[in-house]
Length: 216
Image (tube, rainbow, N blue to C red; front, top):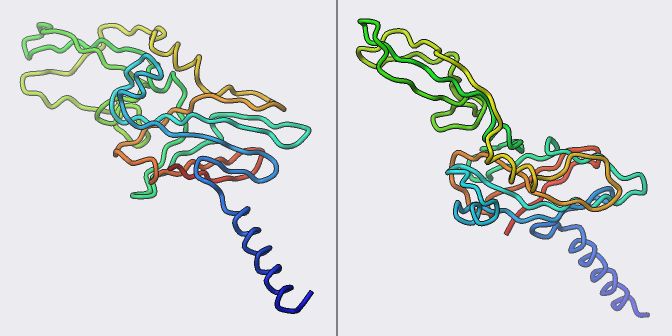
């Protein structure tokens, strides 16, 4: 083999190695675990998938986790974080109870004369509009009423119970368990700003190491 031919073969081998090392969209792996996934951002598409209206501000990732070692690994939704590459916003994966769970407080509002003028139901622990339940958001317990003519709000009663909308989310979410076999399911995230799939990255940080998966 001539020197020129040898150099050409070496160059081709280097290019091939770089191509193999570069992660493909919707895939990531490191020899211990591999991920395959797609992201869904449109509200109607999420409803079609779940049969439940999550409202605005949610993103769902369909994920498949493939252990690549004989001993397998533990998989948990806590291993995953969704990041926006546009503004750095990030969200850990949410459980259904963080979206629709919690306790409902029925608060009676009183005029200065002391007569109750109605009730307001507020969910505690769920992800709500105005930051209720979101990381960094204002919780019900530390909010203050500023409406004119309203005296101190009083808790009339509290009630807890599982929201029926949680069931389809629980049925389809990524299982939390030790596994040697591929498993798949959904991951739920809350994102304040609408972001295109190509501008998101999914970070895995678990017993299988650390991976970053881009979407197309």
